[in-house]
Length: 393
Image 1 (cartoon, rainbow, N blue to C red):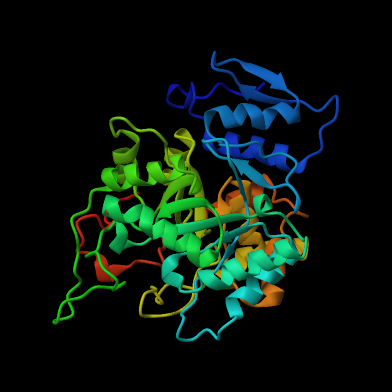
Image 2: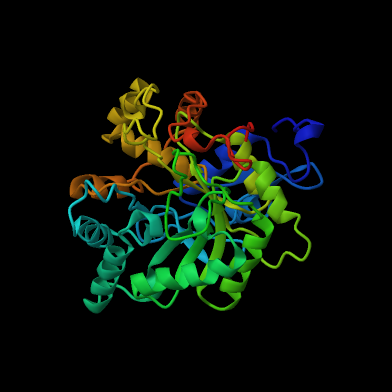
């Protein structure tokens, strides 16, 4: 019989190690009539549940969806508004000056053929027209239906004023040539001067900021959801204080379903993950494999994640790459991953993470790699009043 958790871990807050251990069991082991797993009830006494009920119990406290029976065909998380998000998506960020025309469209088509059903994009990536083209082509081919695809779009910093939110989303829909997006998120909690210039500066090269009212912007997103322009709404790069600002807003109609943040074995974001679990907000991890080494916006002094000896050693055991191990680590924690790649082989490889499962010991080893390294620091905007990375989480 396991020891009872200390008072600080009773009630709805699960001990992190036990939580992950139980989740791993439900993810990796087939259920039998005799297979039982003990969990803690609200009355602080151990009781027993079959594996099929285990994750259901966990989701009522921390996890936003059922997480057992994950497979390439079935890996969607239930969001707090009842919609579902695939655990693995394709990131589509690319420097438009260095990316040949049609590259993104081809990558999306390859991803869909490989099994991806979640595509992450943004207006400021300048390639949403290619994403829409690829999705529509695959629908025309009969490969899938519109409802099979989960597309996430983003509201840029120059479009925070409430009267600009809906027109900006409508412009995205026109570019995609789709009737709705599945998720629309505030890309950054920092407002810039409104206008057609994406990165506004004055004649001296100083960034032009704008008064930020996240609650007013959120109300405009709620109206877009109510109008059917987006199925779900969420945020990105929000810290705990900024999330609480939305969650505690008087008259809140719709909670954020997700918070998209940098998340990988060198930056596990455990505290923010725990906070979001408590509020049934899904974490979506961008740069789950580290990121590019572009010194203009990336901390290139940090070590490359995929060279890590622990990730590579575990990968050898399963005949997997360090990248696949890093991705599997996050989805076993209930974190959605959106690795970006336009390389056909890597696109397919990044999706092949449903045929193995990390042990509790391996999860602990990878968790111990955390160095609180943030590759994407966005230091050029560190003087913005709502710069989100000054605070611990």
